[in-house]
Length: 272
Length: 274
Image 1 (tube, rainbow over the protein chains, first blue to last red):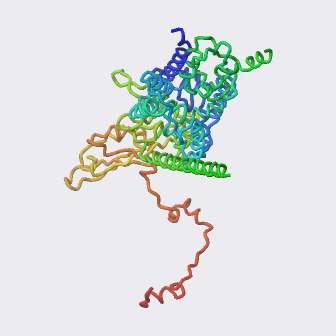
Image 2 (cartoon, rainbow over the protein chains, first blue to last red; image 1 turned 90 degrees about the vertical axis):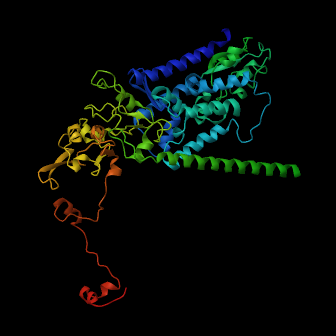
Image 3 (cartoon, rainbow over the protein chains, first blue to last red; image 1 turned 90 degrees about the horizontal axis):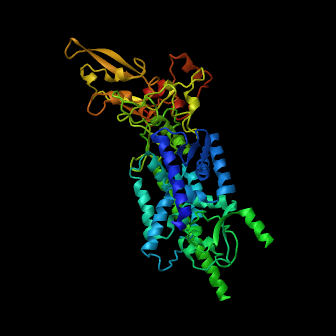
């Protein structure tokens, strides 16, 4: 239990958020209504998905002020505070891909490193741009017609139907196909949040003097390219692709990783 | 030298492949997105923009469906809870995923006076101004979710059997559907009471479709675009003063061709081959 603190916190957050969304439809609660596309917090604060908003604008429709304000609020929150925390603390697909990833490790499917020539971690940025281009060409928000994120969220709120097959497909892809395939290589929403949150203040910080180079953090990290400094430098993980999931902090038994505030981290560095 | 040549070739090959694969992905994605737009026979909530614009504008948040689902009036006669009208399209529903729609035979639109589904729409896909009357109040009677159509071959009222289920189910009683009286010549002593839908009043709520007694409803709602025709602007009603206004300033158009060189009476009397 000791090394599951952030994992449990994340699961709790995900469940509470999804349950509030579910209750808005099933019981008429006014805590958190709608879906990620646009939500109302406490019945009046609009929240909106910035990537969805950009797609709809690209398709040629001038959105209502509610959505634009909501997208601004969400963008500012992750830009200043959360980083890419949406992916690991809110998104329901995270539970699916985490499960696939965990099974991969248990089944020892990753003995050999495979290099996918045209499926890199940066592929998602191309998909993100392509999604906006396709939205403009076809005249409909292109990622929203197949997004497993909102398919799963709507599934939980309104019922899955055949949409469950998309979720199973993502699970199988991540389990038997590419490691961290969806969240780490393809998802354009994750790419958007990587860019939005790249300068946020909440960061994982590494202390290399405590590090014993056990590499547990790199094994468990879904975006382990961001942990390049392990046992090398005592710096913050500043790469926007870090989802602030805190699994590395959880599994570290040597107190070499922890959450910190970016500006404080820098000041401490200056003092040294 | 050879090495840098090699590098350059590799760079160009990789770039070309990346561009090619991006184009491939873009084509597949565009094709798919375009196909999922093509589900025309779907009934949208009140105030929805025309389908093409609606699909652009709808952000798939489900706030309308939640507002509909949580009406206190969603009760059956025995007090049990009734599902709301609006559904959110799921995979397998063959409608664009995540968009709200309704199926009248399952749950029609009950035309709430305060229209809870429309003001909550954040994107503008459900256009509130289109539902405001002269007093700037929400007026559900202004909604055009679709238009009911009667298939007279399967409507038993057209057979001469007395049935006015749709007429009585209509919330705009004797306005959207009226009964037209005709004599039944077959029996010589009975009457036909035929349901006639008036498209200037019908909102497309679907209560008639749900009430219809035939095995498959003989009256059903289709999206207005699919249940109406269009005569075209070149027809002008000579008996309608307002319509005449359209051609008040029309200029005479003289057609000049082989035929028009002669008087009509000339060429009509000759055997000219054209």
